[in-house]
Length: 182
Image (tube, rainbow, N blue to C red; front, side, top):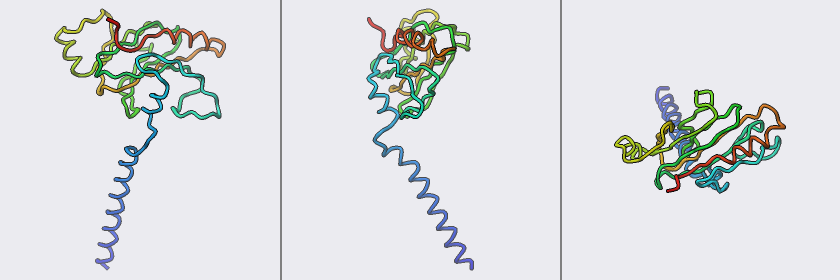
């Protein structure tokens, strides 16, 4: 009886280990990831306004059809990146995602920023240079330290009425994203 229970416990333990190992390795084997989907949008160092999500149509980034979106892909190994512009007078949010699609920083206009977004995105080494005053920044710049070099920025806008959506998306397209021009 004890031998049977030991075999049963051993089988459950081994099955649990195999199960956990499989779950943890499957994402590494995926050919299509959030990063590859964003890369396909050609948004490197520029903000691209995404087409509206149609209900019932494929939605690979799992976006809310009621919101307007702008996306920008960045590589901080090339230098600091900046997000700059004026957003419409309605709810908006800005989120930084790492390569795995995990949010590493987020803010909204309800954080007291207002409608102007001026954000500097730095990696750890660039933040040290910034602290040593070896990188010049404008006053009022929101400094964000990213945990990785490869990331993307997602800007969400919520138009109060559907008729205002195209105007909001036009304003969203005016946002600059990427390294500063010298």
